[in-house]
Structures are given as C-alpha cells and as structure tokens.
Image 1 (tube, helix red, strand yellow):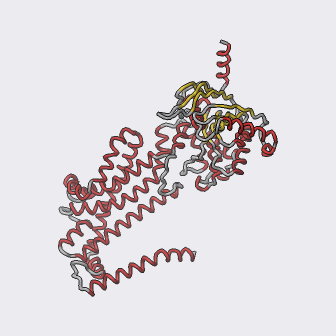
Image 2 (tube, rainbow over the protein chains, first blue to last red):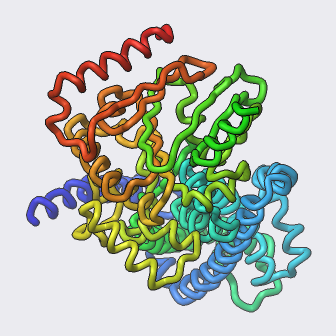
Image 3 (cartoon, each protein chain N blue to C red):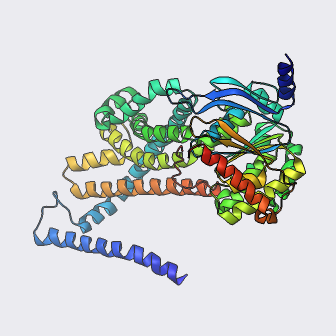
Amino acid sequence: MTRAIAGLLEAVLPPLVFFAIVLAAWQAATTLWEIPVYLVPGPQRVLDAAHEHSAELLSAMRLTGAGALGGFGLGLLAGTALGLVFSQSRMIERSIYPYAIFLQTVPIVAIAPVLIMWFGNGFGGVVAVSFILSLFPVITNATAGLTTVDVNLLELFQINNASRAQVLFKLRLPNALGHLVTGAKISCGLSVIGAIVGEMSAGFGTQSFGLGYLITAATGKLDTAYAFAAVICSTLLSLAIFATVSLIGATILTRLHIAPRSSTTNP
Amino acid sequence: MVAEETAKLISGQALVHARGVGVTYKGAIPALAEIDFDILPGQFVSIVGPSGCGKSTLLRLIAGLVRPTTGKLSVAGTRLAVEGRKASRLSFVFQDATLLPWRSVRDNVRLPLELQQTPRQQRDIAVSQVLSLVGLSEFEFRYPNELSGGMRMRVSLARALVTEPELLLMDEPFGALDDITRQMLNEELTNLWTQRRWTGIFVTHNISEAVFLSERVLVMSPRPGRIVGDIRVPFAAPRRHDLRSQSDFGRLIGEVSACLRRTGT
C-alpha cells in the first residue's frame, strides 16, 4: 500500500514541480521584462480572466463538448457501420476504402466552411465538422478489427459449418472491440478539434457561443488573457472526454478479458 | 474387374479415402503429390514428416478447407466438404489452442455446439461431460488468459471432443508444450481414444509421440509430400507411460527414423 503511494508520488511529483517552475518563470518573465499583456498575459492575468468570464467559459465548454460528443458518437456509429460493410465484401472494401483514406488527407480547416455552408451556422454545422474528423480513425480501426481475424479461428468456424452471421457476431465483432476502443480514443480527441474548428467558421448566427468562437472573438479584441483561458478550457475539455472514453473502453475490455490494443495478426 | 471390386469395397469401408491426391497452390511448386491411403473407422493414425512437407495441408484437405488439385479424396463416402464434415462429425485441433479470449473455458468448449445449433439442454450436458472428461471442471469459469499453455491445449481438445466426433484431426497440437506436459497429454489422449474410439489423424514431427499414440504411422517425404512409409504399431491400448522404456518401442522409433532418413532429410 505504502509502496503504491510512493510509486504514485514518484510519477506525479516531478511533473508537478516542473509545472510550478514553469508557472513561476512565466509570471516572473512577464513582470521582469514588462511584456505587454496583449502579447503574453501572466498566469495571474489568465486566472483572473477565467474567473471574470467563468459563466461564459462554462457554457461554451458545455456547447463545444456537446458538439464534439455529437460528432464523435455519429463518427463511431458510421465508422463501425462502414467497417462492417467492408468486412462483408472485399469488392466494396477495395472500391471504397481508398476514398476513406483520401478523406483523411483533406485539410479540415479547408473543408470546414463548406460543411458549415451545407449544414448551416450553429450546432448542426459544428457537429458535421467534428463528425468528419472523428470518422477516419474509427473506419480504419473497425475495418482492421473486423478483417484481421486469426486464420485458424476462421477455419474453426468453417469446420463447424458456421453461417456468415455466426462468423460476424461470434467472431469478427468481438475481435474488433479492442481495435474499436483504440479507434475511439484517437477519434474522441479529434472530435474536440473538429468542434472548435467548426465553431471558428460557424460561430456567427448562434445565440450561444462555443470555445472556438470565444477564442476567435477574444483574440480579435486583443483580450489575450481571455483567449488563453478559453484555450486552457479547450484542453481540459479534450482531456475530460479522452479520459472518459479511455475509462469506458478499458472497463469493457477488462470485463471481456480482451487484451487492450489487441492487434491480432495473421500467421 | 476384381481389383476394381476390391477397391470399391475398401473405399466403402474407409472413413477417409485418398487416391492420387495432389495439391498445388497457385503458381507454386506442388505441396502434395500422388497421395494414396485409406483410413478405417476407429484407427489412430499419425503422419510424420520433415517440416514443410505438406502434413498440415493434408489435414486441411481432409477437413475440406483445401480442395485437391488432382485425384480423389472422400470423407465418409462423399467428396463434398460440408457433407463430409457433417457425416463424419469432423473436429479439428490446431497447433495453437485458438480459443476465443472473450469466452470462459465453458463457453469456448460450447462454441461448436452453438455453431451447429444443438438444442440448448443437450449443449449444457455435453459441455459438462467433456469438461470432466479432460479434468477441467474446476476451471470452467476461468478465461484463456488465466490458464497455462497445457491447460489451454486441454480446453482446445475438450472443444474438439464436445461434438462427439467420429473423425478427429490434430495438427501438431502439443508442439509448443514442454516435454513432460506433452507426455502427460499424450497419455490422456490415448486414454480418451481407448474410451471413445474415434478415428484419429495426428500430425507431428515428434517420432516418439507418433509411435506412442498411434496404430499406424504414415511417413511423408519432403515437398512435394508423398507417403513413403506405412508402419504398423502393434501395442495394445490404452498405452501406459512405461511403454516408452520398452525395447520394442525403441525399435519402432528406430524404424520410423530410418524411413524418414531415407527420404533424404
């Protein structure tokens, strides 16, 4: 028990000490060299700004979080569905999979305004941008999980004259869970980026504002401390979503006795 | 005319019947060539040969996972893969345990019955019986990642036996185990075979294991694999541990080894 606590301290203490040093240096630098507040506000300023705008920041986090989770959820569903289709037909996989890879190479910042044009300013557009960004890791991981099944296991099913549906539900889908969790962990972080980029293009015309809009608006007014506070809130949001998804994923895999990040390879 | 009649009679009796069977994978040199054999119901036959001689291909051929490029192969009187598997209630034990990690021991063993849609009640009885047969009753709720290699192989064996197969194909099932575990599992296997008398085809490159287990050892040549020897092993069943220290046992091992050496490996 004491050893566990000691181990935890050993892991947590050094980064905390380093963090404190950086904060102190940052504060000292801004006061010593009299760096203008609109360029780099000191940590105290940022904290003040966060406190002053706490209501807006909280409601922005909620809105951005909802947009990101919406995009992530849709990405998870659609990505898994596409993976399922790919696993059932090599022909379809061969014809469509290259475009799924192509999708990843489209710069999201370039396509965001177009998506906003299609799905409208506000929440719908933000979800659409977040969805497009979340989709890719789910497609690749779901497809990998559903198709890279141990050859002997496939033969075992064949020897027992298993139907296609039995192979899918009793073998391919459970086999894909480890990969799906990996995909979801990558994808949920991207969904927050997507939501913020979406809000930067779609912030206008909505009654309530997300973090992306707050960052654009605050930097526009040279309120750098407020912008910093919004950036920190975005990071915290990302972290919270990632931690939740990781925890849910790890719980499911442990319950099912599947090794995390299981990448079953063919012999 | 008479020879043809005799051939018909033999093929009618044999559970597995191969005449002039060859397999050539696309664009590669032949894996198997001119394979002839008959395996009678209830026989335990081992196939030994150098690695890469097509022993595993031969088993996959019998299981209907690979089709012969030339020649005729029938299982339980049919050349159709699915029919043959159903009629012979074929089971297969792989080199690795190949268990589903997300299923407990019990659920892994039940899998073939689920896939073959055996009535639920029958399943539970069959699973419990076979688990106690291989001594796994206490471990039925454990998961594969909680078991040793030998235990996992035992689960794999139980899964193959749960359907009460008439034809059991085994592809070097104990190859990855240490020698003592292998010997103990060999003894269990010969006991199980004595009780149930399924037809067993056992691929291995361990000569001592082949002689210990089987009534007949087929020796294969290097690629393209042909059958170059068919050696009878006359010991009574079930075979006991002390058989390994008898001089006749040693003599037969010598005979199989000599036959393997003649193939030029």
